[in-house]
Every structure is written in C-alpha cells, then in structure tokens.
Length: 273
Image (cartoon, rainbow, N blue to C red):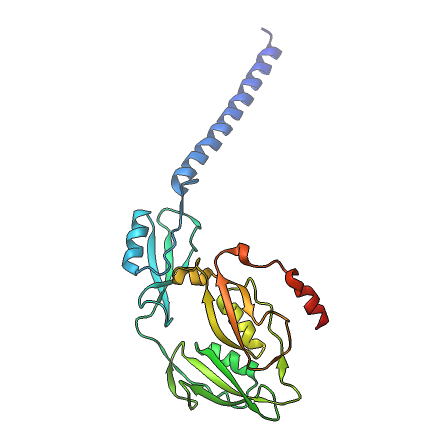
C-alpha cells in the first residue's frame, strides 16, 4: 500500500467515525430529552366543572397532576365551593405534574358598591353594571323625551341608591325613557350563541328575556354552559318590536338543531330590513 492510499483510507475512516459520533450524540441527546421532558407522555386534562375541590384533587392525583385554586366568583345557581372554571381546559394535553388552575364558586358572595346609573345611556349603564360584577335584569320603558336614558335603578323591585353595598351577581333592573318617535327595535340573530352571549345581544337591542327553555340534551349545569340557542320566539327579523318586548330562548347542546344561516328566509328578512 503506498502512502497516498494509506492517507486516503485514514481520512475516510476518520470522516465515517465523525459521522457515527455525531449520530450517536444526536440520538443520545434525544433519548435524554425524552426522559427529562417525558416527550409523547401526555395526559388528557379531565373536566372538573361542577365538582368539589376535594373530588378534583383525587381525580388529578390519580392522573399525576396537581391543582391550585387561584380565584373565586359567585354564581347564584351553582353549588357553593364547586369548580366554575379551569385552566388548561378539559381535553387539553399536558405532562405529568402539571398544575391545573381552578376558579371556584365562592361560598359567600362578594359585596360591591352600587354605582349611580341615572342619566346614563343604556349602553353606558350596561358597561358600568358589568364592570361591578352585577347583571342586567329587566328593562322597563316609560314615556320620556330621550330613548334609552336611565331614569331609575332598581333591585328586587325597589329603587337602590348609589353607594349601597350589594351582593355581586345581583340583577339590576333599569327604568328607561322611551320616545314615541324612536321606540322600535328588532330581535337580533342569536342562534348558535351561548346563553350569556345571546342575553347580551338581546339587551343590546333593548329587549327582555321572557324565559329560557333547555331541551332534553341539557341535563345539568355543565351542559347549560355549553348549550347554544337554536330558536327564539319571536324569530329573528320577523317584525319590528316595541322596545322592552320579551323574547323566549330555546337552547340545546345538539349543534345539528341550530339552523344554517339563510334558512327560513333569514337572509331575505335581513335584506328587507
């Protein structure tokens, strides 16, 4: 073997050895990272809504996860101390040891100060009510020069003074002005919306909620949070409505019940308006 061939073979061997070493390092690094980060060892986050913190703790512990209660709200129709919201959401993929952040329904409602809404427009009053953790109740209209001008603020049928301490989540009824030259509105298109979003749209159109009807697919509070509107009475765009008119909402968790936009002449009604 001459010197040239000898050097060529040595270089080739060194190059191949280097390649093998690089591959080995890459594979070794991946194996170590997999062990450290538990790559592809993900856990599905369970739905903890409407469960007690103790029950949630047992469920998460069995799945090698932890919980952390970070906040509370007050929802009247929900059991005290039960879980209202979680993060990450149910169905999310996480690694072992992940903390699940929980917001629970407070045992005792918080107290907030009632704002002064008299003289506000309905839209301004709504923003102020929501910012205080309160809810809009019934909209009552009386003849006045300015439509949707707040004349009175009521709680449980009685006028409530600004500065009064009141439970968060309380419903505040508004007495609003109604000018005969500006007194009609239309039912908004709320099919496909969840309950609270639908209620907000209805109030934005100066209308009231008459009743909420859940179908057979809504079996508990958790279902009601996911339910969407599939019908209203009166229907969207059916006819002009006097401000303050009541609407009924029909809700379901069966998305196939929600009509496709444009069906039943909805687009035609919208154009005619």
